[in-house]
Amino acid sequence: MASSKAPLHFSFGLIADIQYADHDDRMNYQQTQWRYYRNSLNHLQEAVYTWNSEENRNIEFVIQLGDLIDGRNFEKGGTSESNRALHVVSDAYKSFAGRIHHTWGNHELYNFTREQLFKTSLYSSPHRATSDNKIAYYSFTPFDGYRFVILDTFEISLIGSERGSPEFNKAVKILKNNKNEDKNSSIGISGMDRRFMAFNGGVSEKQLLWLDGVLDEASRNGERIIISGHLPIYEPATESLCLLWNFDSMLDVIHKYKCVMAYISGHDHFGGYAVDEYGVHHVTMEGVIEIPPGSNAFATVDMYQDRMMLRGYGVVASREMIFPK
Ligand SMILES: [Zn+2]
Image 1 (cartoon, rainbow, N blue to C red):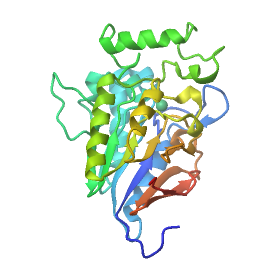
Image 2 (image 1 turned 45 degrees about the vertical axis):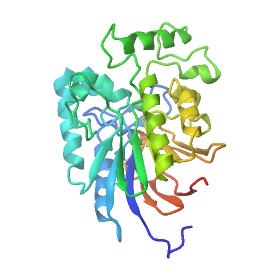
Image 3 (image 1 turned 90 degrees about the horizontal axis):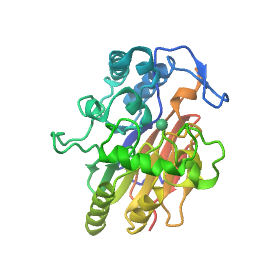
């Protein structure tokens, strides 16, 4: 445990896969877990209340790890229902005293096109999206010496991209690795190939190069980096079915430098945790949508000089993560 004398630098919140919808509870696709579409809003409200009232600390910001509203909204009533659901959820977190950083998941793209997302509150980048420069990934510095990276793990994907666009065509090519007609089906696919699903996505060369530049600069400035994206990138912290298509290229970039302390994701509702061979902590947050009333799934992370202390609520396990040297 961090010594009580170690100064706390700052704190932030984490929450994943809220998937709110005005929809009756249903089993998940594997018929193994209930999904509580309406109640997920109560879980979010409880998280916001907790963050606002944590003793002796200000929660500077929250990273919403994607899938904030469920694709069922769009199925039910098109974009107007998606907008309505987004409004309901935004109302629930607007009392949060700090800033919310949103990562985009598959459900954001079931509800909105990428073009539309840039115009919603889910576009949390400090940069203005111009017509010829629409980029959802960015970094920010909440405290001297720490930089946070928000990735766009669906930059290359079948969902949300305009048919015929270079990103769409690239996704079609990558998904040829999945021989099933239904590209969301993993029947007959084993090992790491299970990641080639239409509900996953990948990052472009351009995003990888950008990340390389951020990490290079951070290394030279002695900054510590925490990366967040909806999709996990390290199989021991999740399962192959949920991985970023080009997780290996992403790990290669991260492992070139010693500045990355942790990679935090959502998407895999069961959650997970593992440390890779370079000492980078991989945290997959449990999904709120499958948490029954009476429990929850969110966390507050306290940052110290040499470690981060993740304090879990509900099903999320608390853990101390020592920064790699
Ligand atoms: Zn997801």
